[in-house]
Length: 229
Image (cartoon, rainbow, N blue to C red; front, side, top):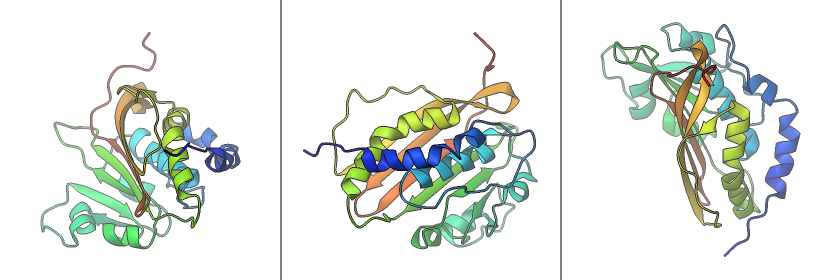
């Protein structure tokens, strides 16, 4: 059994925190273009980019028809969700679009692109629409991958909570044991638009032979009030 070692991941955390989390904790009044402030690397810097994209796209406002263009990062394109995932159009008016560096999910991964954002337009049943941010990247390190995986697995929850002011609502693990791969699923209550709480799901997968895969999803309508006791 390996003993998890945290220094490398923690050092990167210290370097990143000074310039990142003030922006992460703020819900903007107007939609703003997504900017990836950190190097797109398979460590905390890449994770923070996902948090920032989720805050800007999923938590700051509901999905509208104009939102994709307002959020579009520099160098990205807007494609239908079917074209991004399947490689072809369905022929009907898209119910969801994706902001993607390459316009293709497989190519996003192959080229090591920054996160992509999928926006599902509003319906009568879901007037706020839906939002998903996903990021996959192979390891950028030739050594110490096991240690980085352990560190990311241990520190993901506290960083998610701190960065997005989130409260975990799913039961946490009873303990930690270093593993050859991780698949960490969690659900959170996160402050979002309208002074309410959004239920957000997170899935972090860490595999030595494939890299890191992180998905953050808002699929339900906001509930409650942040001011409620």
